[in-house]
Image 1 (cartoon, rainbow, N blue to C red):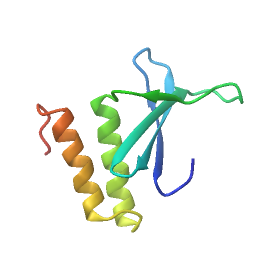
Image 2 (cartoon, helix red, strand yellow):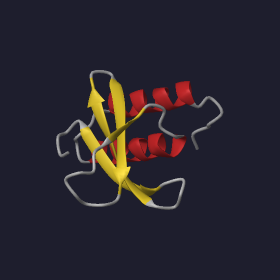
Image 3 (cartoon, rainbow, N blue to C red):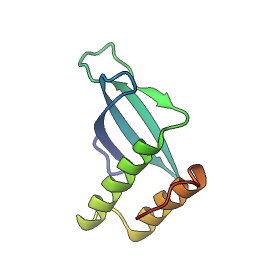
Image 4 (cartoon, rainbow, N blue to C red):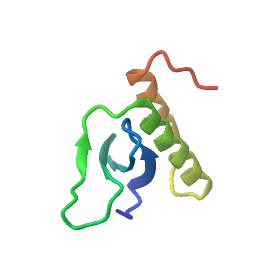
Length: 94
């Protein structure tokens, strides 16, 4: 991790154990991966096929912070918001 197109964070999982998550921007898609919050060479990143809303919102937050630091463009923010609207139509932005 560490490229401009990758963003990572730590969040509690459904079972209460912390997990590492990262999103990778490939073309016009965001690919999500996760692993337990443990260190070791044998722990692999697992692709998240259908990431939950909280992961999408964390990604949006990170992209908005990256915009302030000139890492992302306004179109990047809008594209993440569009993806959230498509996947979670019941969610309303404040």
